[in-house]
Length: 229
Length: 177
Image (cartoon, rainbow over all chains, first blue to last red; front, side, top):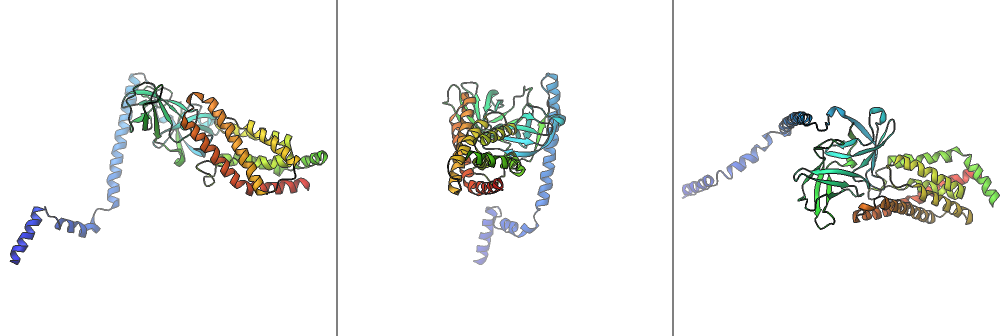
């Protein structure tokens, strides 16, 4: 009888594909599992691979844009600048940068942070530059929805989410769609990501509206990049 | 009273430290201490400096100080709404208030005056914003205007008794010295 029970139990183990044994092994061997360091190595290798791919694609993109005589946005035209004053909310939504006219920065230059576009240079002094954030009332920027290939106008409303005014009656846009600079833009860096559509109001007149969640957040950025034209 | 006030004005204008303290307004506006804000909105430093100045120094000085502060602040902020009209009006009004009534000392009164002054500056800025961006005067813009105006006037009125009463004490003492 005991032998029969043992064989029955082992049969259950076989039927459940080692359940119990495998779990016990996992529990006992947990201290010897590959540590965080090994995971970081693999992650770093993956990041390196992605960066290399991105670099190759950018070079390819530049070459193709050159063939099509579209505006170039070379990385060499970007300079880093420290944020020396920051008021992302309130009446004036702006950043002040620690570099200005002497470093080649001029009005209208694009200001980027990790994630995408933050705003545009509005005025410069010899050593500082004032950035109008995309959220500031009065900020207007032509944008592009890559999924649908439609244009729109991004308007700052003072709130943390700018308003996107579509130019078409039927923009076919949905929450989650990426908003970026148009690939044919010559004033701003082409294809630069801006944000993600959070909600769409299809009943608005004369054209639908959308709320856009920006990718780059000025509250947490100490250094930015300025695209010099 | 006029002669006494004139001599008072002459003396306070000879106090470089009082005039130099105005430089703190653009400095604090730019530094925007993150720990001192309400709902992301900091106090209106110009109002906090202008109230004691105008109360001690009179309407003309308050008017000029309001204009000067407004011009400097407009210079360090992005283009759009301007602060100097509201600051000039406040400087004039507070200057007259300082001359016509017994000296204002109570913290509650100072807080109330700064609360009202900041609300006036905020309403002025909001109205200008609505006029400039009339085509995009969406409900979001209106909600943002209310929120900013209320938050700024509240935080300014809250810290005014500490800062303004201290400034008044020092400036009145120096003016009489």
